[in-house]
Image (cartoon, rainbow, N blue to C red; front, side, top):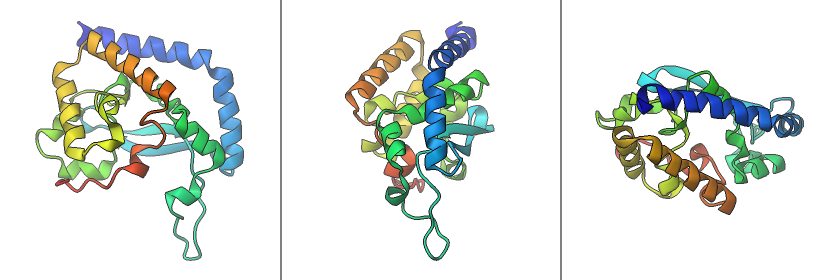
Length: 201
């Protein structure tokens, strides 16, 4: 019952309540990030969701689009704005994903949605992470996030897919909030701190 109906219902209700509650903060962040990023407060990127269906993930944009003399984007560390760094350290950059949850593209809890380029190089077991909706936070995120190997992350993701239930999700929510408050493993996104997955690492 939880997997079929209750989890999705909780995702929708909690996301809606949180978005309404933090609407003033949301709008302030949109304003400041729009100023810092030349009118672009949001970062939107195509990601694979449940059953590998592609959707557009929404996050707050924490880096500008400054380029070098050759027209290539500067390194990430040179493009992170001051407000962007604050937003990342407090994990506020994840807030817009609540919209993805409302739309049914994501869940509050689940394997993080990674880039499309990884799809062809997952092995059969790793592909099982797409048997559920991707999440804003997940089992791998509270067990090391960017400090563990890709192999370990995928093991955690697949373990979650096999075992998730209400109590496990509640535990993940509690530990995620604890990490956010303590500012542990929440300062940078996967795309910045993790090495590129090549199917072997």
